Each structure stands twice: as structure tokens, then as C-alpha cells.
Length: 223
Image 1 (cartoon, one colour):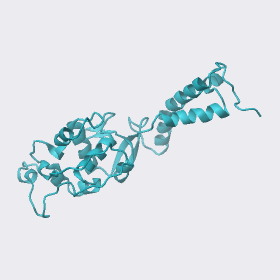
Image 2 (tube, rainbow, N blue to C red; image 1 turned 90 degrees about the vertical axis):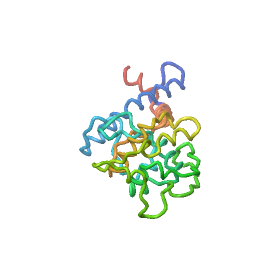
Image 3 (cartoon, one colour; image 1 turned 90 degrees about the horizontal axis):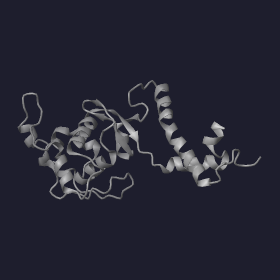
């Protein structure tokens, strides 16, 4: 047997790899939808993501597909979330344990940590616990100024604007509103929908393997 099974008719092996990669990338949403449908997860975002436990979020690349008002393609970038948590010296578990405390910007650290680039593999040595006020019974400005429904009355919930103003550059285009919405979702929900952050290098590698074994997937299918 001679490989590839379907040699390219164009004569450019690199172009064969590219067209194969594009077809793989186009097929990924279909695979995601089939996987979600098989598990009974029917939702408008089933073609672009899947649900994960909140505990997996700190170690996952991608984008949150939820806001407080429901499912959305414009949710918080998870790299930006890691930048924020590292800047505060705070874990997602700590934030979920005391959301009212950490929603108050008075708990922001006096000397924030470097936010890094948000990568899961970033080497970080964090200080503090997110700037929590000392004493378990200490009342924050948020709880002291809560309205009759218990909603904290603060100018910059979660210190989102202070974070984005303090770091160099932008956190992947994240706005204070997007960061706040993402934190509101993550501190309440046990499971959240995310869009996987799949680099194009993955389809390129798949396209290379297909090109070496099968050949030109596009022309081999059409002709």
C-alpha cells in the first residue's frame, strides 16, 4: 500500500495540510454538538462548548458562555479570569466561599500580585488572600451599605475596574462589566458552559496526519 492513499492533484503538500486543517476545524462544532446531544445537553451553545464543573475552570482555557442573564457567546475569557485572581492573590474557591466580602473593592490588596498572561501553566508566587479584611467578623463597606434586598452598594463591584486600570495593556479585551458578569456566574453556579480554547495548531496537526496517511481530504471527497 502506498501512502498517501489520495495524493494531491495540486502538487502543493502545504496546501493539502491547510485544506485538511480547515475541514477539521469546520467539523469540530459538529462533533461538539453530537457529544452534547448524546449526553442530553441541548442548548443554543451546544455547537461551541460544553459544561464543566467550576473546579475545572482555573485549569481550563477558553471562554465562559454564560452571563447572569443566561447563555451568551460573549462571556468572560478564562485567561482574563486567571489574571484577575492572580492579581488579587485569590483562588476561585476563596471567592466562592465569601462572595460578598470579595465583591467589596475595599478588600483589594494594597500591593497586587503580577497578573501574568493568564496562562494555566504560568509560574506564579502569590501573596495574600485577595486582600481580605482582617477578622472573620469585620464588616466591609459592601455589607454595611447593603440595600433592603441585600445587594451591595459599591461603586466598583469586585474591583473589576481597578484591576483593569492597574495592569499593563488589556486583559484580552475584557471590560469591567464582562469581568463582573463572569464573577457573578462563577460564584453561584456549580457547572458552567465554556467554549474550549483550541489553538489552530491542533487542526493543523490533524491536517498533517491526514495528509500523510490519506492525502487530500477535500479533493478526495469531491472527486
